[in-house]
Amino acid sequence: MRNQLLKLAVIAAFGVSANAFATGLESLPAAGFTVSAGTNQAAGTTGWRECNTTGLYGSLDYTAPTTGANNTCAVFPSGGNDPGTPVSGFTNVTLVTAKQSVTITANGETLATMRQRVYRNSAATECVFEKRFVMATTGTFDYNPQLSGSQRLEVNDYVLGGFSGTTDVSAGYYHSANTDSPVFRMGRSFTSVQIQGNDFDAATALNTGYVRRPVNSPAPASGTEINGVGQTLVSPGTPTAAQQTAEIRTNWVDFTVDVTGGVDEDGTTAKDSPFLYVRAGCGSGSDTAIGGPFPTTNNTVRIRQTGQESQPWVTVVTNGVTRSSANANF
Image (cartoon, rainbow, N blue to C red; front, side, top):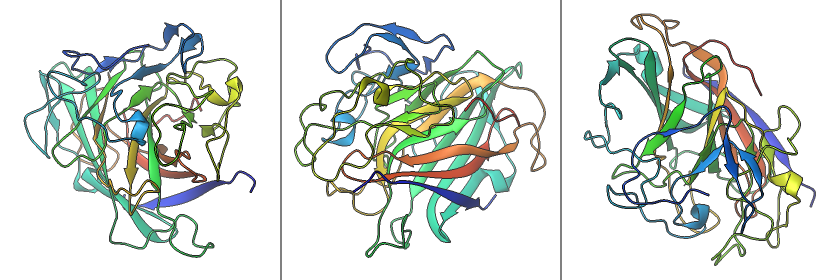
């Protein structure tokens, strides 16, 4: 079967390991990082950091981060499932109600609910943008209703945009008691990169050719949503080096997870994403209107199924609160 790429228009209701004592948002510099060649790693410049290295990107059971282990990129605010600021000295900016909770639909069906918050420092120079997704499990969302049965989306990457024009960007996540996936890796990238274990049912290592931290070169074509081998129905495909790259795109931050609405191909249900955070420069002002200082910018949220098992590629596009109305650098 040839590779399949589906892109759904959406209507919205408005080399680093997971060491102990590495908590906190991690810098994602525009210049990237230098990485050396190794097992499942090409040499070059990468915009990616590894976060939670347990669970093989969702192929195995992961170990949740704690303050003592498996906590690179992780933060530990005190508010439980309403965590509050992840950074000391920042306070909540009250967004208008329509921005705080957004219902995401596609194919005329509910896909997820997106929670949004903004926290700002006292100088009004930096903000932390929070998003959290709860996938619908009781609805009938089907990413390809033309096929028989119900094709439930497995989310491998959430990609957040709106960060052009600032070099001060760091990111991370909070794994609450209700969270069903950590962030396995995150990158300053528009393009998500497919990653697969060496066996769909009992993967214990990444398959040959898949990399942990995608490098810049050779860069995929501008606007490439997903880079990889595509749909692999029988066993994991072996990508070329060019199918495992992602150019640094400073407008975007990609979080690799394993979240699903309904039952995943590996037999699990994991509907609640972690709380995702991007820290970036921002401005002053209260959010007293739908526009406000934190505009809802078109197409700045991408929800992607990248084929961790045998699924086809799917990208769902919607709108989100950002630091700027500019949305470019694809």
